[in-house]
Image (tube, rainbow, N blue to C red; front, side, top):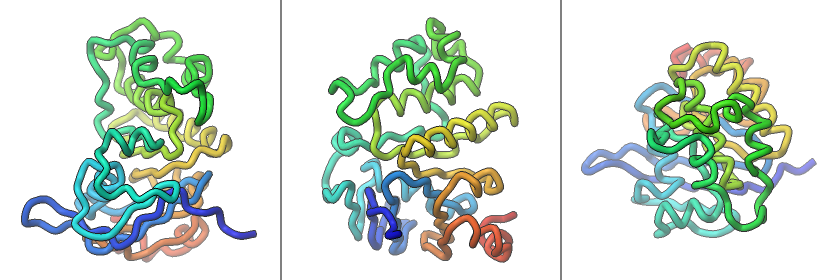
Length: 239
């Protein structure tokens, strides 16, 4: 069976900060309905790649296409409206908004044209948020804030969901809840790009893995290939 067409296709990405070049020709395909991971040690270009995809950092070279549309020159808010949502590292919840207000403020207002992530469905995914819907953002635990950040992104009915270190700093029991959430999203056909360090937990969830080293793609393949190549783990992932 032919592989699904990429909903996002990046070619020869060049990017950096000031005089510092960080990405050196990164290629990335994210097929519709699949979970793709972006792996590598700290400082290897994962966050920079994400920033270029969502328009938070200007490209110095290369191209990004989403749903067949070139993204070059588009502002971050315009790219978000096309259907890319990010769960940022650090969660970034608003302290003076309730859980419910967070979700309604970011909700897709176009009558479900891209899906159906209404409040009922979000609360079914994260029942704890229903229990806390009238609590302010600064009254939530770290795990609850992460659930809210994911639900907030889903409320936009994204065609592509990006999770940037979504389990960082969470207790093991909360991490497992995030993994269960990701499994449910995959079963629903949600296209997802994941940056995370818990590779063992990503193996059964992801369809494809891309490994970065110093701003270049040095390895890519499916979970079976990654699981069987421990040299990649040792040399590029610090495991």
